[in-house]
Structure formats: structure tokens, C-alpha cells
Length: 123
Image (cartoon, rainbow, N blue to C red; front, side):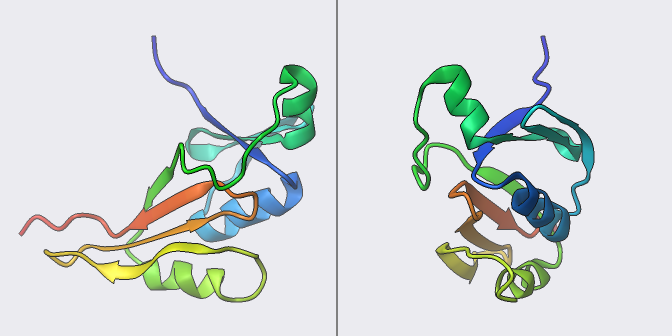
């Protein structure tokens, strides 16, 4: 058995596609009935499709899951976040950890938690 994808619920598919393409360089692989499969195994599902099939309401900002990314240009990610194009809120401001690794946590426009860190440097 192998894990194929991670699905997150989003309020606006087109806004979410743009967000994940611009910030993380993901690309759309396919679109099917309210679902968008993106590169790196991320699947976006429209909140209405989720509710229609499960009858379960979603809870944004629930902190039960986190998408984790690594990027050498974490400051560039923050510049994009602060461009005014997206409504995001920070959970953890940019910080530097012992050893020099940087991290930031924030919510995507639909309230999914994201963490971005610079790669670990093993000197």
C-alpha cells in the first residue's frame, strides 16, 4: 500500500490553485468534478463537493493537520503572502531556530494550516 495524495477542503478552487501555484510552484495535473489534483500529491476539493458527499461541515483553522513545505527563499514566500493578493493570517511569525533554520506558519485563504521551513543544514 502507498499514500497517493493529501486532500484539503477549500472555499474557492480557482483562488486556491493560484495560491499554491504562486507560492509553492505546484501545478495542476487534472480537474475533476470539484477536485483538482496538483503536483506533489496535493488535492484541492471544493467545500460544497465535500459537504454534498459527506454531509459534514468543515472547520477552518482547526489546527488538526498541517501542510509542510521546505524552501530556501522563505523571505520570498513572505513577500508573496504580504503582497495583498491573498488574505492570510500568521500562526507563527518568521523566526530563526537554533542552528539557523527559519520557519513560518500561516493559514491558506481557506484556513488550512501551512508550515514553511528552510532546509536543515547539516554542517
